[in-house]
Image (cartoon, rainbow over all chains, first blue to last red; front, side):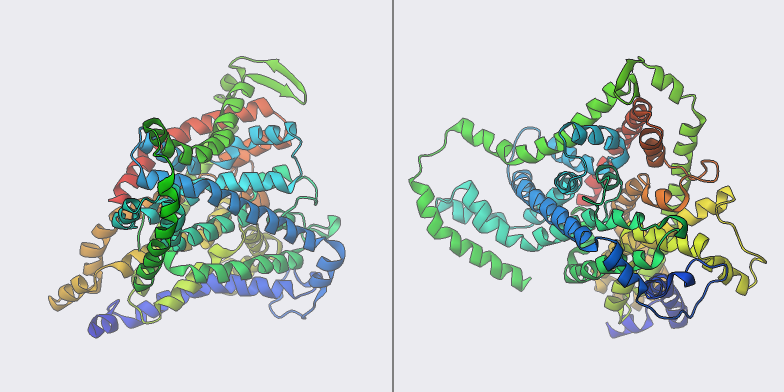
Length: 280
Length: 315
């Protein structure tokens, strides 16, 4: 075993050159963007890039004084958390049915749910805009919540279904002979047993919801319903152009919690990202 | 594993007393039993129908009209005959395929190379977190990172000048291929991690004893990868690349923030085309017609490639 580990990649030099180079490609833009957040605006959009800036908290002051950053945060959190709750309430029973019951059309229903993930947001953008306009939900966090839930429902259902398929049937059979009803089995056995899958699904759904851009752009027309993702695109100050230092700060405010969540579910990430198709 | 068995036992133990309550209930009729799974899956399906079928039908209906604000005038198939003669529509379709295809190929190659070199490295856990990071940034923020690096902050030009690759500032939005390149770089940077994390997981999960045996037979690391790992990973690669490929075809945020389709529409993707027709030019009927066409393409792809990918992935 040790010999495999040591000789891996055959040539250690080549291996580390490749790994370190790619690590730099990943990290350098992030670190550089972090310095953008802590420099004055005069040192960002310049003919000659400035690599060693004067440090300043201008962006932070600007964010607090000129932009309702707390409101954007609240909108993001409310819409994202609400959408994840909707997803779990709808997806857990659906996943249970798809994983455990024989019924006519099961395959087709499952594939229909999956296929909604393939639909480009732009395809339904115009009709969804009119739909929310007609029911008076434009520029509202509630509309965003409903949309985010719809975008992630397929993913959440399929991830949870995949984890439910792994639970041994004997467990359920034992409870059934004791007289447990279907819902008891779902609540008392299936949900606790596939909790890691449910958490994974919730985290991935939350990330996609935080990132959502197109629908938010169309639905949130004023800062009343802006989320962080779309608020960023509006950090422009007329003749001053794009306010990059504020954008950088806000993006790191969103990045930090996501990084922590993802590290927590790291082991389940590839299964989650493939909607349960890849186990490992 | 030990942990999950523990939770399982706890679940079973808790179920027992509750079961007593349920057993007094009268047994459900056969129809009720038959309907039960539909009741479970029904709410989710209805929700999705509301957000896909309704808009799909709406788009089909609206695509038959010329819509000017509140005035809808019947156009029959007029929008469709116009659109199939619209060079911008075909350009958007081609751009989506070109930018998406190049970007997806690059991501796949890089992700596989990096995964191959790190999956038995002693620091693999650390590498995984580092290589994952670009994916955890909001896409709109990533678009601004690259907009600043390429255009507004001239950093890339400056770096290329300092190593002598170019002699003066490059205007990235002035040429078709340079503008496309900026979109490809942004997408590759952000989404290579998606494929990497799936590939490295698959390689790590592979049976070490097979590798060990092959090593003892004198096989090189590279030949183990080509002859053993890669064939075993095939279904996983298909699923991962399919999912990524689908997402690439919806590219919008980067176009909106970085290029807005310039120069001359060379970076306009299908999503941006629909957005521009609908929400910039207010040709809602026309945008709907484009949506319907894109939906048809999606359905064909979903029914063929995706269905097959997910079937093979499960086995």
